Amino acid sequence: MANKPQPNPSDKPTARRRRLSRDARKEEIVLAAVELFSETGFDGSTRDIAQRAGITQPLLYRYFPSKEDLIEAVYEKVYLDRWDPRWDAMLVDRSFPVKERFQAFYEEYTQTVYDPVWLRISSFAALRNAQIHDWYNHVVQEMILKPLVRERRVELGMADEFLVARDALEAPWLMHGGLLDYGMRRFILKIDVSDDTSAIISQALDMYLMLTQSKMEAAQAYT
Amino acid sequence: MANKPQPNPSDKPTARRRRLSRDARKEEIVLAAVELFSETGFDGSTRDIAQRAGITQPLLYRYFPSKEDLIEAVYEKVYLDRWDPRWDAMLVDRSFPVKERFQAFYEEYTQTVYDPVWLRISSFAALRNAQIHDWYNHVVQEMILKPLVRERRVELGMADEFLVARDALEAPWLMHGGLLDYGMRRFILKIDVSDDTSAIISQALDMYLMLTQSKMEAAQAYT
DNA sequence: CAGCTTATTTATCATATGATAATTTGCTGG
DNA sequence: CCAGCAAATTATCATATGATAAATAAGCTG
Image (cartoon, chains in turn blue, brown, cyan, red):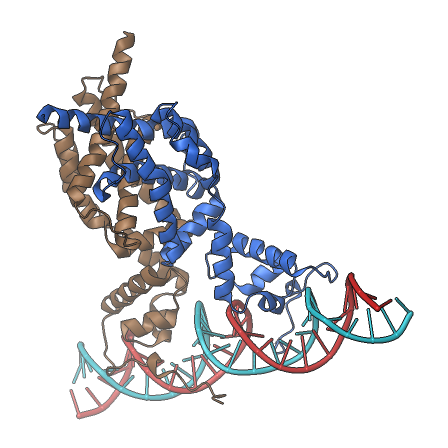
């Protein structure tokens, strides 16, 4: 029974044929792909994407030569433009204490990153060994964590060394990773955690600040 | 060309037919599945699993009624028996300071958990919304984090309250999550991080211990 | 409004995949 | 040593999936 393919009615777009510009259509496909991939991972089917975009599946191949190309486009869509250029200046504005600066920053940053779509897609990408995720970690390190280390040094009256060694980054990474993990628990696993993001950020920052202070005091005790 | 299926030679087990006991064969299949799923996620094919197990694909269905059942078995294999019963006593042995106890514990615990197979499969499971991952988080909370909070309270001379409120768990979760994130960066993303696990653990614990101390001092200032 | 460009659809392939039925063969007990 | 239970294989299905070629039609331009 049902030997003949009998095209699935859900394959067909519900609405009447619409003609869109190349860019507009491409955008709709990518958006649909982001949505599906965030749910199912990158194994989501091109037919499912097409259905969500309200088009037929072969049309997708007019815009992306292969599924892998579409995945690349999804990476770009999800990873790029998450960085607000204001933040660069914000993090090094020494008219405010480090705690205040980074508290304000992380409150904005987490608003961008504590998003199920972002959290899920970036997890899937990391598991696929997508190099874009490496690149993103590098951005975090250069744009957030190294400035944090430097600014904290200055605040503690230490030498204003531009270079930040790998080992000095472990503490900020611990803090940053803890915050990411909190986002996963709250928005992906949907565990009943505190919903006071500000308090969580404050605590994470305090941990780092106290650790650096105690380290400096220990170092001073030597001299 | 090649219209006839022409069974893939790689489908066939290389060695001659071996008869195994039900349990032994089942175990081999699960091990192969763990291996494959940790690489590809749970979309890895049953044929691929069979090949790795050195059997034909339909045989798999004699042991597991469906792929989902096999996945359940993989969950159990990976999640269970990761807890060493010695740890229970270890964490509440007050003849050692909290730092020392939890340092020793985390050094053993991370040896279990900083394993690419475990890290990847548990990530895939979390993204699949597998309830086993919720269960595991619950175990972490009850077996590690709540004891940590309680023991630290005692060490700081606070009331030995058995109950640990949700908010009191955020700081230990931040620390624990940071350690997990370190494992991901090091063993999954293969980023060049410090390979001194002990030092990382020590730093993470220090962060928590300092935070709790300062909180207690702040509370005492009120009284 | 005719005509053309090209966005979009229909039809179709080859292969991959989960699952089942029928057949073969390894092994153990009598 | 051989009978028979059950482990294992072969053959096969139905469907899903990435991808391509040919047919259709939307909408702009002269």
